Length: 231
Image (tube, rainbow, N blue to C red; front, top):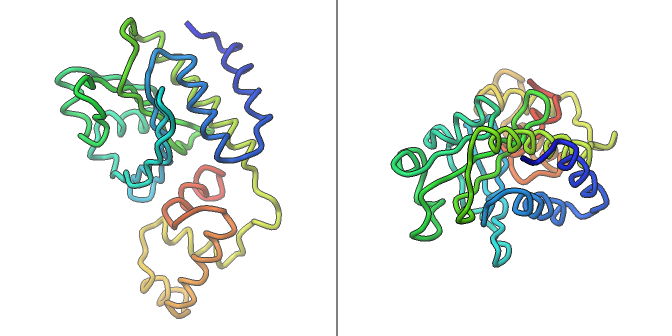
């Protein structure tokens, strides 16, 4: 079983990487090195709509960008339970077919999946999935325990490496708009309750997304939860 010390030492080495894209690649590379898996999908997670968004897939053949994969994880029981319990989960055989989607089946040999939530404190910011395993792989409780640990260590690493500069802190109005989005309010509802135009609401969202360095409002909400700015 992989020791906590060994994992921490390897992850600490990742701090030498300065590029965000390479950092994500290395997270999956270490995952493939430490565990008996042949592929690893990396997803970001937003509690707004329980949205899982693909980032990259790493296999023994190279990297594939998977930004076209977007799922409400409530439709994928194994991923939903892993995020809800903040623990690594594994399923195979008939249970795999029941709990997953054909999007994750890359070959006819795929009949099992492991899911590892990436956690920082009490917040899940993403998850890693693997669907192809080494022939001698045994995914038991001990392995799942170290996988859970991996997700926590990676969460701490990503939080540390992506700290927000003072200049990126949202204004009071921008933060209010983002909180209301997290509560499920529409642009029209926010405009009425805040007594501003819908165009102004959209502008606050646009500037908040830019300051946070994210791609869309769902990703922005996920970042704010991850950083503990909203809860």
